[in-house]
Length: 262
Image (tube, rainbow, N blue to C red):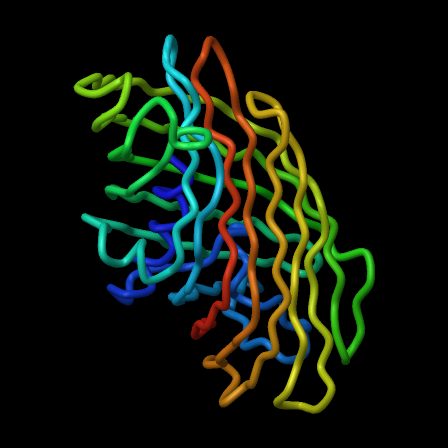
């Protein structure tokens, strides 16, 4: 399941149809004076991106032991079936509304603890994560902005785990879960020059999951009032367990993207 989340990001990047996960934050927060506003006063941002993320964590289903996944970015690309990610933001003065959607379908190799119960484990995972939130700028000037944000993230995960060899050879099960987490945190940016800026965000929360978090830091370059590029590092983690179903994973790696504002 972890694999699916991370892979979703990776696949989107590979397909060029992805966007961030603050899930909706690869689009940097730009000072009001530097943004091209519409006649209504609203500004909008969309940001396709590429996330070279690796995945590690534990998965389990009712009645079966936990399996461990530790996949690099290369491993995920080899097993990825489909992925889509997209994020966007609408801003009016100090207020903002943002959304982020991730979907992935992938296969991965896993192991049981110490490799005793099975020689190898095949995992197929479908993962959807959608975030909707709002923010308010508590600090704002010509050089940057800091937003306090909050929102909800919906997770829906379905996994098939098949054991090969060992005591559990031939066992295969399919299980899934859907849950909602509340998240809160900050995001912002700071311009060193009219073109070069630092942008980042940090979110943490829980609800259905014991813990759900998302952090990133990137350096950006503004080509025009409407187009800029960013490069940095991002990590996302979620720890969910209920009735024997476990989805406890961390995805992290370099990220690059392009932000379009209108």
